[in-house]
Image (cartoon, each protein chain N blue to C red):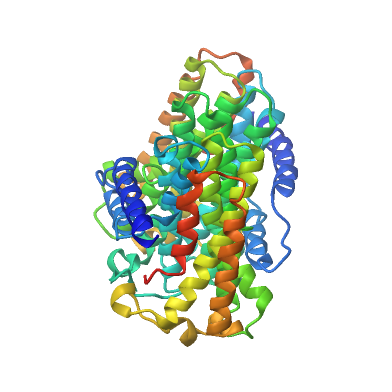
Length: 298
Length: 298
């Protein structure tokens, strides 16, 4: 399984990289600095999991990367903006990300805030323009913009992030950690894969099932991150390990312990894959991806 | 003229306030704090100029407030987000806005950054949902999302803001100040009024003319702000005067002097009104608004 999914990830990643290069404005003119700052973080070596999930969500119902690339780019822009803002001194105050200095360390805090704002805004620009250009996709694009904005907003990612920060140092609580992980990370992951299915004309039943799959693997993804923050290798991660504990972050290991967190992970992966039961072999990459998330090392 | 336009502004503002109350999520649940923070800045006593322009842009071609209220709210949410981020310590480091402590002074920097992110995202949510709910408006809404995202993004408002900040303390330069003002302030104002005309089914020629009008009054609006920062009364403004000069901000008065800045303002108002020549009496509020901008005291 591992080699096949790794090859799949590599192939799709290369499509995404090309599309990302094309979708970004050039860093010219008086405001070139903020665009350079946007480029810096967007091309700092991300795994492109969200755009790949968007493509896989389309393929699951017979669509292709071509149907979804602008939206796949949009979710990666939103992910990239969220990392820039999360790393700010007022937030997690991180100096390194993926082995490189964080955005505000290179461009200063003011430009980093604005680069995040620019990436978030550009994501909606991409999706709206795609809706205007692509024949017969207007309703789908409006649905996708609605879905992604809900997932990224104050009842989604932004809400999860604020709880993550305001609960630092407080008692580890199962309800709180599930809220944080489902919102901070799960919501955008679920929206990414679901958007692909919507754009590839999935039925309502298919869209619902893929969304449930996405909710579960989104949560798994963040639990895996928690575990990597303890067990991972600094070289492979490109950032310090053990930082969650130092900061008193509420994580699955801090609430449930390491061993139980791994059990929860496995159970969630099984549940995620069950939501794919009614689909055919075209959901194989989604199944493999779910299993792969808990095996990754970075 | 003054009394009539003041009454118009008051009437439309009251419509906008009601719509804003309805369009915002309730501050409940674990992430209630960030929603309270969003409410705090959104309901801190803004003049609602951008949403009123959106309504006036619709009325100019026979539409009404009902056609545009969700979009009118969206542009105000974007304006509100931009103020929260502009006031941050890393940016303008302002302690007061409209006579009240700024968002980060009340909620802390982390929540303030996230409240801004939440408002920006919510704006796109509102517009997409409106496009899905309102019959026959899908293309118009995608056009409006595209227009507003361009105006707010790195080639618009965000771009203007980054130049405003990175050129602090540098030599006053006419090209730079026009770039800052047209992008930081003008772009969203132009998009607001133009969005109204698009949603009310204005012809391409009408949309273009209203957009040109918006570009000019957007610039005028920021020059008027520069002048108020020198001549205004602290009581009426709710924030300190003279702060631009202290910070070495590039403004029209710092580049052209106060008297010449006022001449430029008047010339721009005349130019703006000329773009309305081909319209009928339904553009009277837009004409009056253009003249009103340079007479306001706060």
